[in-house]
Structures are given as structure tokens and as C-alpha cells.
Image (spheres, helix red, strand yellow):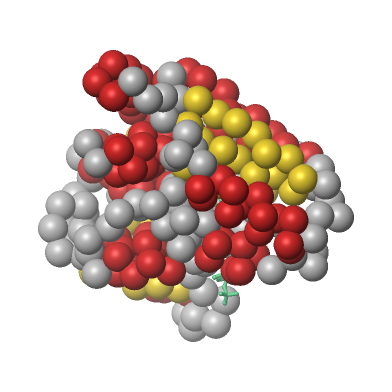
Length: 288
Ligand code: NAP
């Protein structure tokens, strides 16, 4: 068997086209252009690329994007002042603080300072709580993109055995929470694995849907995959051989039923969902 490729890039293009129509309607009705501000501290080249890609994507759907740069040696106070100013600025609807922050800056304190109404990454404890209670204000971009991919490509989630490999606050934990909720896009039986999990290969082999977010190049091998399973590779690893995922793509595609490539899988969907959240944030703030 050779797996069907789940083309995240193509789906992201579809979603962006929908968002462009929705954004144009919103602008026409309200006279307000949704605006996302990215806060970038320091000059990490990878973060620079991520932020530029997010800005380009905003432009494509008619969402305004601004970049707020701070120097590598910015203090907590300077960064908090910027975040507070953006919180109060009615022309700004979404705020994203690009991670990682330079050493010495308290990430949690900064993320907690972002207004929950402008928290398009859904990192604020208030928004995390709402997700857990299954009444989300925003859904975190990467898990939201994965859930959309599963739903829109007709992969049965309800009743499926889902194994999420990785328990980060950004991907693994919210992904597991979302898929176990009651209702559309949920109702899965979810197992979360991490570095202390015993018999990892065996647990993974029990998955109808295997979602991998660990940051270890080609970690998931063919013998860890149930024949016909859906494999979602979140990993982005820069190696001498180029960009690779957490899944050994060439070997696993011989066993899986569906698989996302890296690049061109989850990454573009993450950005599309950021745009969706920015538009949603603008709607919330205008009460429309
Ligand atoms: P993270 O914070 O780096 O945490 C890694 C998780 O993987 C931890 O829960 C860790 O377990 C687990 N882990 C590490 N080694 C393991 C092993 N050998 N066996 C089992 N579990 C192991 O995770 P993240 O931020 O979610 O990032 C994961 C990957 O996804 C990275 O490559 C990142 O670049 C990528 N990513 C991609 C996107 C996208 O849009 N495509 C978005 C976000 C992240 P412990 O908790 O026990 O330490």
C-alpha cells in the first residue's frame, strides 16, 4: 500500500480563499480592516522567516499585518510596555509574540500579558481554560489546522483511536483535548505519549490516527504504524539533508493510509488558522 498524501498546502490555499471572501465582507460591513501585529524580539533567522511568511499570508487575504521589532537585549519591562500598548490599541485585533524569546525573558509572563481577546495563538490561560471546557474563544493554530485537515478530508475522528506523540502546550496537549471533546471534530479515544512512555512503538501501532509533534527527525518508523493509519507529521527539523519531519516519510508512506508531507503538510495550515483567528478576533472586538 502507498499512502494518499494529505496536501496541507492545497488545503491552506482553499481556506485562504474562503477567508479572503469573509475578510472582504467584514471590511465592507464594518469599515474596519482586521489587523495582526507580530512582536519579534531579537534577530533569530528562523523566527524572521516565520514572521515574514505570516505577514505574506495576511496580505493575501486582505488582513493588515504589522511587525513590532525589539532588540535582542530588550528588557521584560520594554516588552510588557509594547504588549500593553497593543492591547489598548483599537486598530489592533490580533497579537502574536513570536517564540522562542531570547534567554532571560519570561515567556509565560509575556504570553499572560496579551489580552485574551487578542490572543490569536490561544496561549492565554483564560483561552486554554475555555478550550478545555469545550467552549473555545480561539483554537490554537496548529491543532486547529490538523483538525480541519481531518474533517475536510473525510477522515473519521469519532470513535477513532488517536495517539498524540508529544505533550507540548502548543501542539500535543491542546490537540489531545480538542479530539477528545464531545461533538464534531471530537469524540476520539485519545492517548498522549511522551519521552517517559513505555512500549511507545506498540502504543503507536494501536492508532487509527497518529499525530506526531516531538521535534526528532524521522523518529517514527514504519514498524510503529498500523497499516492503513492516518499519520500527521507536525515536526519541522532542519538537518544537513534539508527540512524533515518527525516521521520517516518514505518508509511510513508504504504502510500508512494517509500521510502529511514535510514541508507542505501541517505548516501552511497553521498559518491559515492564524488568519482565521485574526478575523475572528476582529469580529469579537467589534461585536459582530
Ligand atoms: P516540544 O515543546 O519541543 O516538546 C516535545 C515533546 O515531544 C515533549 O512532550 C517530549 O516529551 C516529546 N518527546 C521528545 N522526545 C521524545 C521521544 N524520544 N519519545 C517520545 N516523546 C518524545 O514540542 P512542540 O513545540 O510541539 O514541537 C514539536 C515539533 O513540532 C518541532 O519539530 C516543532 O518545530 C514542530 N512544530 C511545527 C509546527 C507547524 O506549524 N508545523 C508548529 C509547532 C511546532 P517530554 O514532555 O517528556 O519531554
